[in-house]
Length: 266
Image (cartoon, rainbow, N blue to C red):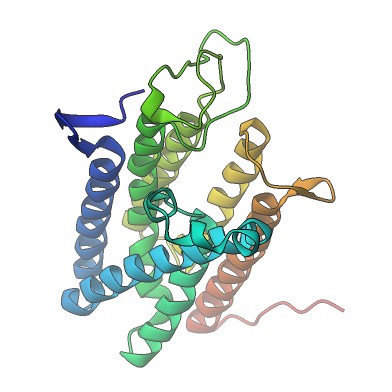
């Protein structure tokens, strides 16, 4: 819709890059603030955020290559093209790699695992909400064709390869709105005295996975289906299970601290 924020002749500043950078900075600000409230060392948390951002970029690119592996094997030169380098990659790939790196770093620095990851959950959702606005501005991650009154049309040639002059679902805005709601919910939950350690990261993974799974039905992409769902939806289901594990661990930890016996099932 508005891919170039500022343009001078052939030079321009992409709206997508600016919004992604803004999303990261706001997410970092929220995360450090919550870390201080939790009594965690802000410097270590800030370092972790930066390292996770770099790990996320690597993971997003790696999964992009894996998703389109036949194409890159057939034309390996495409790996080094400007279009490939500018592509954001697969978000779920970045999230998985960043999550694994975070667990390793937290244990290496002797930080409390659940409490530290809870500080990141609201910020991640906020960063995503702003980043998806960047996707909308650039025309990537577009939705399927529709005839709804809130459907959108992309007309800028710079927004290619999105279909031009077709009414599409604003899938980017769907996800941005969902991420913003998740952020508000998690931020308020963080301030609640009843919140358990590990609950926020678990809720983030569960809520985002559900939202992304549903939104994928309205998105247009070139992924082949694996059974009834796309690869992205299967990954979302896997992360939903991981979120459930975090919630279960959070509850078990709270019961142990309270000195209550855990229920067992036959």
